[in-house]
Image (cartoon, rainbow, N blue to C red):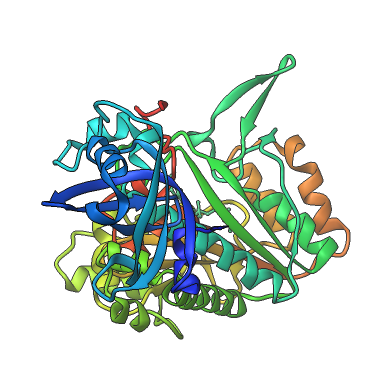
Length: 430
Ligand code: 4AD
Ligand code: MG
């Protein structure tokens, strides 16, 4: 008998198969048993008829509790009303581990309780759907870059310098000196771009974010393309194409999961394509007209980002920010010294910044000026400055936070559900 997975059940219609997994739920109606069975790839309904399976199997079924480990055998039949469109007419049932008192019952539990049981919570339907969509988003991201001639070049996690400012650095002892957990692989990405032309790096990044918000984690995954001979406009185009590609993939490959989350697919479709683009100065204008007490030069917080994004029905690109609020590596605009060629993509529906990027400063003197002005230790950036000494060309890149994108695509209230084991200011366990 073939051993199959729930997600492939449709290919075995009319055949007798075996599945290994766990009890999601079970109920009885007289001599018929209904078992919701999960195996990690999906949930399948199994039907047991007492007269068909016999007394012993039916008695074993009656004893089953939520999350007991079982194997089931039976025939796959079509049923449009069953989850996934197919169900199993059960002929055999084997119990491997009968359990008592699973901590997460179908009733409502508070978020704190669920977060403390995260290692079990990920078995629940919604959490499972979110993490499957996360996988699809990561796979789509990799496929996008791989099929566009980018080389994956890994960047280190232990670093000796700060990429994104010194206030959110995690410091750790490193054989008698200080090391910092990487906030972004970008600086190495720039070196890689000069070696490979188009590169991307993808990995965990760390920020000692002391604020508790629904958008911030202390450990999050970022994908960062970096492209040689690329100006700001082309950089924005790459971001648009990437987001569109991801949305297409999730819609095509994760239908059941989107359904589980009640995410409207038409809404997602609308977000694809070319994004509206406004300068920071135009964004400030929008805020002021909208009644915000906001002055040119300030940094947008969540309410500002949400309001700006609400004015558009697609993600919106904001570009050319004041130099003072942006990182040292952003290129100054040759037409306006007060701004740099940075760009942020703000997602609709209140999700805020999902992408941050820039054209990089390729002029050695301007870069030195910024490093001094930011009081960064110049010696730690010597290798980075070499990139402006040896074959310096215009180049751009961006970072996309995977968790922010997952939160937006799944339409979740908080970023903590987008990663298997979230790390936040007060969350280190499980
Ligand atoms: O805008 P950020 O700070 O940009 C950089 O780190 C650049 N060096 C990237 C680059 O150009 N290569 O971060 C990039 C993205 C944000 O737009 C956001 O999506 C995500 O990373 N992000 C966070 N996600 C979750 N929790 C946090 N604390 C995050 N901080 C940034
Ligand atoms: Mg940013």
